[in-house]
Image (cartoon, rainbow, N blue to C red; front, side):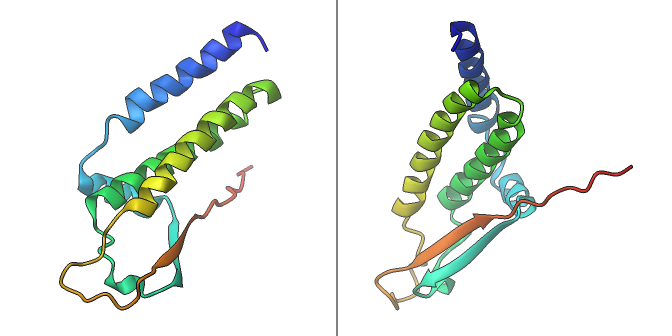
Length: 134
């Protein structure tokens, strides 16, 4: 892999971090963007109704995951196979860190008693194939 290509990809990733992830919009705007990102929350264990899904850290982390996902799917198709590997490594690393953040969140509502010691949920982002217009 050419050094110049690797530097270009790293620069692209750095700009994404600096211009998107580090410049978060207001909480209200993040919430609206998350709604448009087509995330679905599927309870796997426990009662998720006791969770405060408006928790600021939850919304910020979910927003970051959504932006990372959008960036990845927009850029990966345009890269050569060797360059995709760099992007995959970055994506995996950041994706793992954000998932760990979600796992560490304590967003149970304080006024409700704990009904289950474990709450497990799956967060899925649906991707739709856009039909090309003739």
